[in-house]
Image (spheres, rainbow, N blue to C red):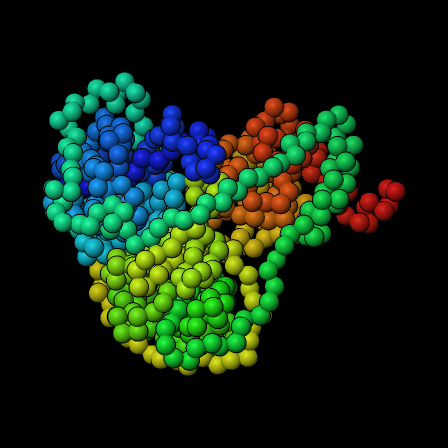
Length: 590
């Protein structure tokens, strides 16, 4: 059995800083293997050894990326391939995918190709899907439990707010969840001991005619905006009751309790623009009506500026009046299969017939794979995880967060069809218009390479994205104590979130995890209870208007990342907060 593992070298977020030109300062920046890739390496080595096969690791990057290959080989990989040359500089996801796919063809065939679910610096989650499409392979994303026998993978997949049990025959592409297995980690001495012959360089001469690098990249990075967050970092002290009273007073004056601090885009879905001509296509995921409504409304606004019509793709029963009210001028009702590779093939066929101006999808596991496969099929520039969309000079501009949300960059595509996946919850729900969409029915031809055994949903994806108030728990709050926080959540109207360690232990679903490898959210008020304050978590709530922390340790790092800190045992602080926040209780004491 031959296993290939795709890895990426990324910067350590704690070491990042920006220069005067607003660009990331790379000199002296510490680099490491992407956290999700560490699981892919560990599992790839394990599977290859169990089958008495070989594990080969690939990366595309500068010569310095050899260090992550050394770590993989030191962990147990048999050999590694470094795709490096100045010709590859400036590669976007599609150019990267094409280079990696060509290297896999040259070195293969491989029975199994493993990759991390996404990289923490760009968070597109689309390279694996594009490679699967380029190599014509089935794919399973976010695999948390993996069994391999009799030439087939049986997997339990971690989805955005649920799970999927599925089977696929080899060869296949698999992306790994963070909790699949212990990570590959080797220290400097172990990495230095790897012999040079274990790592083979590969350049454009080896891969054949491109174009490679920037020349083969249909997307371009433009302006960059730094998202600086200035926190007050005020830590209270002394009598706990006095701290609570002062904290509530500060929260009220800041507008964090009544929502006046939060800004919300308002407006209605614009009237239909072009009836004929170009189109903006929206790929809607089954079972996510709110996200579909967000995307259709955004597409309608773009269509007004681009003189386009909006065409929604649906795999569910269509109400023409409802779809038209949300922003669709037309709906293509797909029947036959909701499997990502099948939907992508059907969408590609439609694109070849209609040449749309743009295609939008949600940045969910489903949306990322469908959009990634579609982009690879039609050679389109795809911006992943956009948070804002606009039209400039007749082209689509997608604002995308990068480096843990510390900045956003304007991405444009040079390809005829421009594509983007959009982060759920960041776009407003517009007031529906009065309109009725025309409906066309198309049949999706299932390839039958992926068999879904069972699927389930243990949460709702947009709960945290749309929450005005969030209470986050760390390991300082045991799961049997969550009920003690309910009165506080009721008083604030808050949803419950978690740190990575809480989700790792299964105390709350992964969909509730906030941080680099979880969710990035922007509530009006964020309350951290029993949270230590690791960087991984802090980056996830940096867009919150006001942040409050409760911790008994006055030196806890969390106090350096919030506006206000209460020093005390949360068991004592929370009931006092509830009394102060409840009007009847507060009036009775005054």
